[in-house]
Length: 277
Image (tube, rainbow, N blue to C red):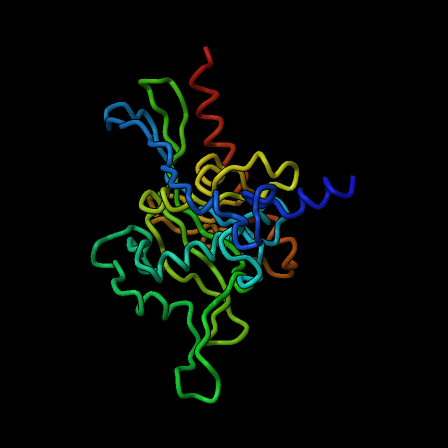
């Protein structure tokens, strides 16, 4: 019984066959998986669509698979957080479809080029030669992810579908202590193959793992809507749900969540109503 517990707690590839510790995880490293490609969708086949923006709070237990491990030095290739994967591939140039956090429309004019420019968004104000060394945000500094996606009804297949379009890491601002900020937007389809090569930890059965891409595109996370496309210039929920006089912050947050759930229900109701007679 103790042996089974030990094996499951490691959850690393090639653990049973490794002749030395450095061989643990080699099977995962060798893998070069491709993401499952979406079929082409003709614009004329889209009967209805709605773009929604959501926030994935890493304080929620259901989202811990995206957060941990927060110690980036504890594991090398055998297990990584989503942020560590993103940061490594931004810094080696594999992820280059990066856009300004202030604009989520992925216009070419808002594209950020150059690794050093991108790193500055999650770097500290200290530079080499200062009394304190230059540092960059680690997994423990990340508090959540904003995502942009579109729900649409494909009349050709008579099915409601979802496509993830963009993802934005949100974390501690190392230049201004105590504040949080979004670092940048990434065009999600451009990083699907990268995320397909990294497995998510499964605390139920580590021999049955899915990739980070599988987790995200299949929406196996908890989130709430903070914005959706609308006639008011894509205003956020906070723009029209304001805190009332005398209302506690807890009550205000509850009303924001209720509005988010109302929008979700509106989307699901459209799918249900399509089959009503």
